[in-house]
Length: 318
Ligand SMILES: C[S@@+](CC[C@H](N)C(=O)[O-])C[C@H]1O[C@@H](n2cnc3c(N)ncnc32)[C@H](O)[C@@H]1O
Image (cartoon, rainbow, N blue to C red; front, side, top):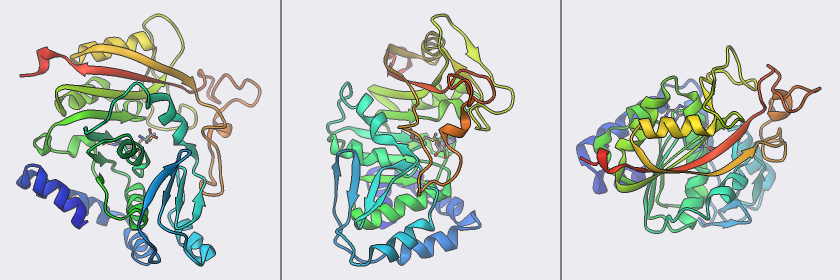
């Protein structure tokens, strides 16, 4: 927390940073399990703090002498969705092989010395990838308290680092907190009821010349088209709109972006998203139609995701 306070209050607008920190603490404390999770984090064993990325794994902390007891504590923070991470020598095989997503976007993006905002960061796994790629600092936000507690557990092993996660929705992050060179929104747009408002809000956070990295679910097709699922999509509630790539390009233009490029389209596979010991609930396999695996169980096209890059257009700079 001291590290987070220092990063925000010292280097960003202090009054705004203080109120963001208060909202972060209030939101975390409101959750019914927060005391239990906090006790887990507070009692994690002391190891040498260190971190590095090895073949897509975040390896944090030196190996703890009693891995079974440590694994028992870390299981209190299940479900672990984003990773993979190895903490104190305990390998956490997360639901998502998030390293595969990172490998699809790392090459075309230059993060050296960049100030980054990662919106909907989950437990902040990608922040470590960003720092490894040379980013100066990552400020992230995610309103799901468990993921923020996982982030704190991870930081217990990494030690202080410029990867900071606030328990806030983007809408509750004051714009005055500061400008960012690169803003990531991955896996968030389809959860937002008003997609244009989300894209415009992201643009407001970008410094002049800054870059948006947008990753989201799409539907196949060359033309402009949108799927608005009635009820669930791939078992998920709160999926509001899935565009084709050309529809998404149009949304980005409407939101004031320029130089819009699609750098990847990849169907989600059972290699990338699956049930594991650390996420023992339904995953992609249960979301697909067993007879027609190209369809979700609701009869929609199966999940496929795109990564788009875009710049804040000069018309929006003032
Ligand atoms: C599908 S996960 C994506 C996590 C990660 N970015 C990734 O790409 O793997 C979506 C995340 O967005 C967060 N989220 C949902 N609404 C949000 C909002 N309004 N602002 C910021 N994050 C939000 C959720 O808590 C969740 O952790």
